[in-house]
Length: 285
Image (cartoon, rainbow, N blue to C red; front, side, top):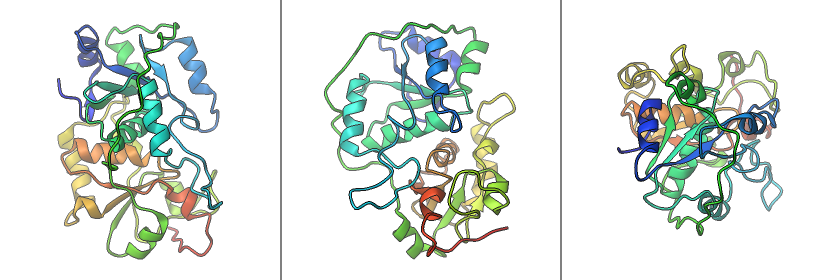
């Protein structure tokens, strides 16, 4: 089975019974209660799964060596992430499945980060923990034994990114998709970041619009029908995904790739970084 974007609970169960079971990554998290995911993991997780914390494992320092704010969840340093991937038992050719219980945004972040290292064999569990349980899967409390390897042999970054300065210079030429909820996009509320609003010219595609009511992704065909008009006439290399802090943007990036619309560009700092500099333009409405 080829792992690229999504995997169903039934297909995952079959893989786990096979000779090469995937590495499982539990990415459950709550922005307003950062310890919630770890508590949920301790209470019960997919057999063999290892926990990844958004702040500690899937993000890097908020400030660079120059003291500049990089956003609430900037990318980890590539060498540090490559070492972490090795400690998780991930090496080239080893299948990986990431999951959460929030519709996939944190699992999508892990998916993106592994693709960024150049690891191709990774997918997100469609529907997360709920789908696993609905398919008859069980949860366990025992943590798996260590399965450490050496650092992942990462080459050049395999997933494209753009920084704030380059995005500012490209406004009007690139298509920006914002994965935040509509009230935040419009600037009506801002619970987390320095200013309310959005990057001028951006279009709003809340990541939750990629999901069905049961928390699973819409079909590839439906996602294509909904997303294609948002990127019509634009090369994927000129489609920039952003959100509040570069996490839920990965959900839209995953959805576009699952829909066959290509690999688009992540703005890791996203609105948290953009809005922290009052010299950058802001749009509302």
